[in-house]
Structures are given as structure tokens and as C-alpha cells.
Amino acid sequence: MFENLAPVINNSPLFKSVFDNATANAVQLMDKDGYILDVNPAFTTAFGYTKEDLHGKHIRVLFTAEDQASQLPEIEIEKVNQHRSAVDRNYTIHKDGSCIWVTGESILAKDDDGNECIIKVMQDIHEQKLLEKFLKESKEFSESVVKSIADALVVSDLNFRIVKANNAFYNLFKINAKSVEGLHLNELENALLTSEKLKQQLNQMVENEEARDFQMESMDDSESKRHYAFKGSFIDGKLVNKKIVLVISDITDKIKSEQQRDDLLAFVIHELRNPLANITLCNTLLQQCIEENDKKSAEEFIAKSDSNTQRLKSLIQELYDATQAGSGNLHFNKKTFSFGELVKEVIDGVQLSNTNHEIRKTGVVDLEVHADRARISQVLNNYLLNAIKYSPAATKVDLLLAVENGNVVVSVKDYGPGIEQEKLSHLFDRYYRADNTKKVEGLGLGLYLSKQIIDAHNGRVWVESKVNEGSTFYFSIPTAS
Image (cartoon, one colour):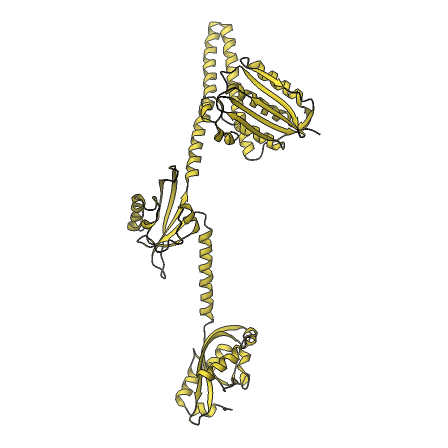
């Protein structure tokens, strides 16, 4: 057993040179039991300890508490004695208490007299381990980000062989394969991804070496046309080969929304233009009547002009209310009032200007409600006018009043063409108009506003209809008590 290795080191010029002059390799000398006898200058530089700090101490002092508890120091010494060498990679405790990742090899050595000792050569790999950890976390983060992207994302090489694809890509194109990585885009079972048009777009992108945005159309399983937006760009760096990144979005709803917006704008312009044109015409004719002193005709044109002015005012008010309701700013002034009186007032007003239909009321509601009187009047007025407007060939409209479970229930039945069942759920949507009602004037906002008003009163709206048998529209609101 060595007590002091100085004579051995000094008698071996080659070993002494390596021991003293090494800068990257820290050398630690110990006896067969793991007690430290000497360390070289590189060890002191790397870990702060001098020979005097460690001489006679077991190598356990250089291991973390967790490694000591796992008996890693003893296991290392045992391996060296059994196999004459051992490789390890673990933390070494610096003199200042910090932990440094190291890799090392311990070798069992013997001198000419047969005395054995352990020589351990160590390298500081702390920065390498930190880099490995950073790269691993970066990769995990990148993959997490890719997976969380709502749009479909696929990365391919310049030959369009897939390197990576996120979950949204699999879902958007209904790809059942466990993985598409390594496959060519043309190998995927999807008409859009294998289309010649997409191939041409990608080829031009590669040839021009520039990012490219484009849109394409494709038919889905139900033979409905869908619209897709592609954003193509490149990944290019010193450590990776150039790659193509495609972000694909299903913009079908956006296209439909834009088309509906354009159709609505054209429709609103048309609806507003009609009364405005009539007012202009009436004013022109009125001027002629004044010049001709035709008082009777002048009065007729004044009445028509006033009717169109009211129509224009009503359309503008509907648009304003719809905008306020959409932003949650529709205001209410709730008070307690007689619901029966309100119903009579609305019926009288509607019946006065619509003599071709008889409004038949059934049921009596002689109680009070706490609500915005003007807004509830607006709802009932809309229901009655719609019933008349959409049943021009009929001669009657039925209004039924009832009280159920503490709620006033109102229903208005028309005898018009009725509405198909699949369209009933959309009738209270903003700007929605059933196909068989599009020739009737109006913006399609009345029922939408009615629903917003009733919802604000903790009530509900619904509709029942059968084709060729008419429709019944309902609303209910709580009573005052």
C-alpha cells in the first residue's frame, strides 16, 4: 500500500510530465481502498482542492449526498479492483460546494515492486451536459409548440419527403396512419396533398427559393367544396439541411363568412336603396303637383314619402340594434306593467295597418310582468308582422296567450308555406333568411333581435313549423311575481 506517491512520480519522468503539465485532464491518485493520496494542478484548477485539502480522505467527499447514499464511490472502487478499470459519469463536488458534471476513468496501476494504486483521470463536461440538457429541453419545447399549433403543420425535405407533422395535420386530412414521417407527400391518401397543382406550387417555391402563400380547393368526403390556405417557408441553418415548412389552414368558414358579408352588404344596400329611391321619386312628383296645384295627388305622395321614410328609419334602427346586441350593449329599461294591456295595444296597432289579415287572440293574461315594455312590444310586433308578411295568401293570424310555470307564454301562428325542419335552428341567427323567404323585404334581423331581447329577460324563444302547414313562433318571459 502506498503512503506517499511522490517517490514513484518523481522516478517516472514521463508520468510526472503528464501529471504536472496536463490542463484538460484532472488526475487523482488514491490507494486501492479509495483514499486520496495526491491530485495534480489541473485537478486543483478544475475543482479548487489542493493535495493538502484531500490527502488521506476517502473519495466519498467528492460525491453528492445522493450518490453517497447510493454507494456510488464504493461501487466505483470495487469495479476498479475487480476489472482493473472503471468508467463513470457523475457530479463531483467543487470546493465551493457547487456540482460539476465530470466523466472519468479509474485505472488500477502497479509499480515495479508490485504495489498497487488507483489513477483516476477526469474531464470537466459540465458545459457539455448543460448544452445537452438545453438541446433536449429545446427539442421538447419545439415539439410541444408544434403539437399545440391549431393549424396543420408539416415539415419536409426539398424532395417533399415528410420529416415532421403535427396532430392537426393528421386530423385535418383524416390520416389514419400512425406516422407519416419518411413518406413522400405523393404517398398520402389525400387528393389535395397528392394533387398536381400542389406539386407545381411547391416546385416553384423550391426553384425560386422563396416563401410562398397560396390557396387551393378540394372536395371533402361529402362532396362539399372546402378551401385551404397554404403558407410555405424554409428552415435553413448551419446544423440542418434545408427544409420546407408548410402551414395549412382550412379557411372554408372564413370564405363563406366573407361571401355572406358581401351578400349581406349588397342586400342591405338594396333594402335601403328602395325606400330612398321611392322618397326621391315622391319628392319629384310632389314638386310637379305643387306646380300644377294638384293638392289631392300631393297629399298621396306626401303619405307615400312618409311611409318610405318610416321604412328607412325602421331598417336603420334594426341595423343599429343588431350592432348593439352583437356587442352586448343593447340597453333595457325594465319596469312593472300589465302584460294584457301591452298585447292589446300591439294587436290594435298592427291590425290598423294590416287589414287583409285578421289577428285572432286566444287566452287572457291579466297579470303584470317586470320587463322593458318597449322591447317586449318590439318582439310581439315583430312576430305578428312576420306572420302577416310570410303568409300573403292567408287571411288570419292566431295569437295564443298562456301562463305556465310562472312564465307568460306567447305564440303566434301563421298559415304560410312553413319552414323545413333542418332550417328551424337557424331562424334566430343574425341575418339568416330561409330560402323561401328571401324575396320578402327585410334584413333578417327581427328574429335575431327578438331572441336577444327575450334572453336578456331570462326567457326563451322557439319555433315549430311544417312545410305547407305554416309556422308557430313562441316566446316566454317570467311574470312579475
